Figure 1: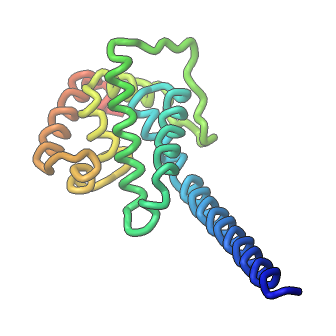
Figure 2: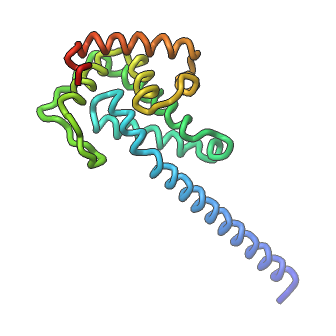
Length: 190
């Protein structure tokens, strides 16, 4: 083999090894993202449902959130609180969707089935709460869902929504008061 052919063969081998390394890195990255999706998708979908009352739209919002995260995964996967980031992306998607569809009503012939297969408890109480929640402003709904359904601290909710802790406290108090008014005393006795 001539020295030129030997150098060419060595360069070709190095390039193909480089391509295999990139392929392995991409596979590892995709596996990491898949594990993340499996750990958060149910929670994201449940939060989206509480925000919009439509399981299909909640699934779309969840998919939108995950697609946005995948597009920047290389940048955010290290050094970022991925749980908080996913909640923020979801809330932005809900807010954007709400602005586009403001004023539309979702009419259901039957109560939706629970996607996670868990027993529903008292469905009429849950539906009354979800219906009352839907009558709140989307920002107030976001505070209640993050604060009470997901059980985050005031500071965490403030960070997710990009507002101050005092705004979260004010919205939380106002929204809870409005819920009490909408649901009445009979609901509180349950």
